[in-house]
Length: 250
Image (tube, rainbow, N blue to C red):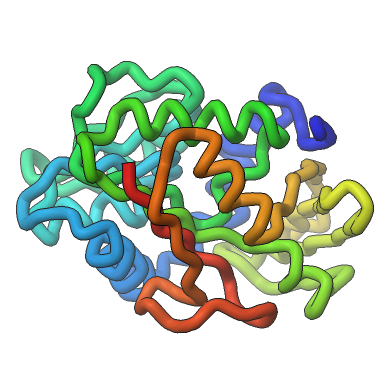
């Protein structure tokens, strides 16, 4: 199934537009809690080598580096990586690397654990997302764990909202309008930023939304084992009303 947006569409979204839409909401305490919870689920050893992929503008990478992990954050967007670097604390910060997560520029068995947080799969469709998982598995050490935190199909079906709006930094209004096709499992979202002077800018993208069953099959096909589903990064139970946290071992 290949109904997700093209890489070019994602490149247009994950740039300055994304920063203006979302980076103003600096929920640093929440990001730290999420990151440390994910690292615990991944059983990353103290001071271990940890891959944050994709890392966006570094919310989780920065918290993990501060906690003492040797963090490498990978993202395709140079704009987001520049913002992440600007937020880093000198020599104690993570290493940020620009790359497509289908082709990671690291040797086999480079990391103790890997994190894929905040619904960062579904961008490319089933086949290419499985390729992403396989590539992450390649750079994990034997026994290393991958933690995925993602929105799943059952939650969308149970609590679908066609639109939301909220105020973001500098008086801007952010409007999100959504459709969901239950047959294909594809959600389409149009994000519109409205500035204080009334100027509008929009981006539209489509994401493949997986069921837990589909994602379990994908991680198995990518070479992972002992996968389990949780409902949050604290290890709570998985259900139709929770998000999906999947933990799997290389």
